Length: 107
Image 1 (cartoon, rainbow, N blue to C red):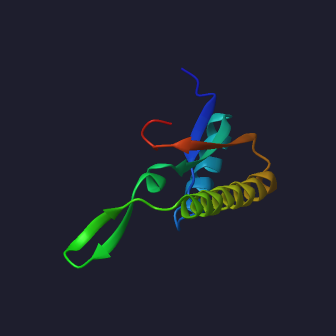
Image 2 (cartoon, rainbow, N blue to C red; image 1 turned 90 degrees about the vertical axis):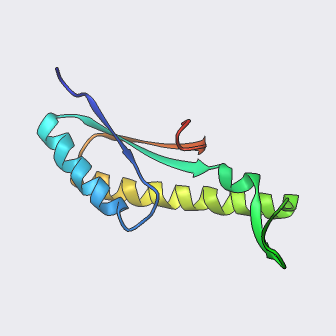
């Protein structure tokens, strides 16, 4: 059995560079292509939590808040993929980048 592609999920956390470095190592060893995925978790837009007098109370956020949050998440995903592209281009391994929206378990 030959592995042709390796999926790497990146989120901009402190682990992102380690994920990429390990992916590069595997891609070279297996002569595989890397597929780098950044997911915009839409669950964060469904409900916001706000501290009320009795503890946490669900609050429906305004459309302006939702749109601004969505924009910030889109920009973060784009920045993470750009940084990934820079690293992978330098290392000269075949790769493709993808951005998706949804619940991570469903994407």
